[in-house]
Image 1 (spheres, rainbow, N blue to C red):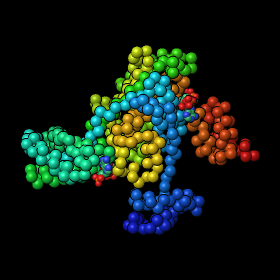
Image 2: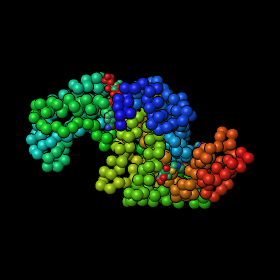
Image 3: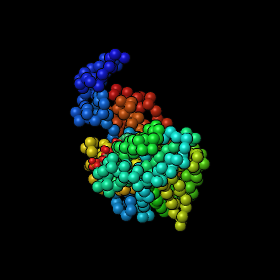
Image 4: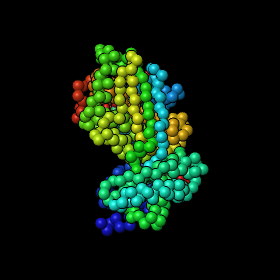
Length: 415
Ligand SMILES: CC(C)(COP(=O)([O-])OP(=O)([O-])OC[C@H]1O[C@@H](n2cnc3c(N)ncnc32)[C@H](O)[C@@H]1OP(=O)([O-])[O-])[C@@H](O)C(=O)NCCC(=O)NCCSC(=O)C[C@@](C)(O)CC(=O)[O-]
Ligand SMILES: NC(=O)C1=CN([C@@H]2O[C@H](COP(=O)(O)OP(=O)(O)OC[C@H]3O[C@@H](n4cnc5c(N)ncnc54)[C@H](OP(=O)(O)O)[C@@H]3O)[C@@H](O)[C@H]2O)C=CC1
């Protein structure tokens, strides 16, 4: 692949030209990329070619820990923001959502090749304070930020490997870079002073020491739909959440619904959604089989929802400092700390889940979702701004509208 040798050494125009020749792009396609370029982002990632933008909307109706809130969300999926607002509205008819951060330490691992767990365990036990100090010295300013290394565990992985787990309060940051520097320094210290054979050092995205719990109640009166009483809808939601506990097929979709909200909020807040996703799904599997993250029960004559999830988020650092919209989104969401960020992400997730479950056990997902999906169907068929409303209107009158229907409607309109 000689064409791409030292591709990253080329300037922007050269790169675009190489890609354009490689993929045989026409002028319009090249302009689509070139017109969205942003000089700042040219330095943010490697081999930059364009800004790929996604829509941002604001989910409304949240009451979180007694405060009225709105949630900026970045998503390409129609009906997600409507559903989050819908779920939040239902919770707001009692006293809203209650969210509490249980812990916010980041976990890191040093993988050590050793057949002698006891020896390693003894070393760590006898040098505990020194090891914590070594970790902290590798990123001294974390202490000024109110954090620091908190504890160390040694875990036997199998006959030949151990994991030395370091738990760090990374203060207001997501902390991947902070903890990775600490781990590498600690690994080097242990290798030198205890002659251990280190395989690698890296944070763990299984963020079991960074948990947030959210709960909320919905009065039955908010739940009635399609001739089904509120109490019966509540009972069906409880059953639906039970199915997500006993069947991984359903659990994956149940959790996808939760992540519809969390990912969109996490993206708006400039955070690493891959880290959040991997942590959440690892946590969903913690009991040996993959399960739903939320549970709904009936308590005191109302539907009660609860969810505890790991969220490794940062209020500072990472992309929060380089993407200009993040600061505005933090202001819109009225979040001023990592704890508030975690609380809101969890509240958005549970609201999203409630709305989806209610739709599923009443009218089905297609009615509400497809209603809002019609716009994107019309757009993908080529409807322009002036035609959009008319095409959506016509599509709504059809039983199962598809792309061909949308194209036919547009064709007729243009005659
Ligand atoms: C779509 C709705 C909200 C309609 O819901 P509805 O009952 O027809 O709406 P409503 O007219 O009673 O409105 C209720 C509230 O919803 C919001 N709302 C209502 N319409 C809009 C709109 N156009 N734009 C913005 N917000 C809207 C709005 O907050 C409104 O309150 P109001 O402001 O009127 O006091 C409902 O059917 C719903 O929540 N459906 C769930 C949709 C969903 O979950 N979509 C995600 C994609 S499907 C998926 O990926 C996940 C899934 C489903 O597989 C997960 C799982 O299986 O568990
Ligand atoms: N597996 C994973 O999830 C991995 C993720 N990443 C990436 O790492 C990035 C996140 O790492 P992170 O270390 O947070 O990012 P940064 O290094 O960008 O930010 C953290 C820095 O912010 C500064 N800071 C200022 N105020 C505070 C405060 N109150 N509390 C804490 N720190 C503060 C600190 O610098 P100072 O002490 O100098 O003031 C700190 O080192 C993300 O971009 C993520 O995608 C990277 C590797 C792996």
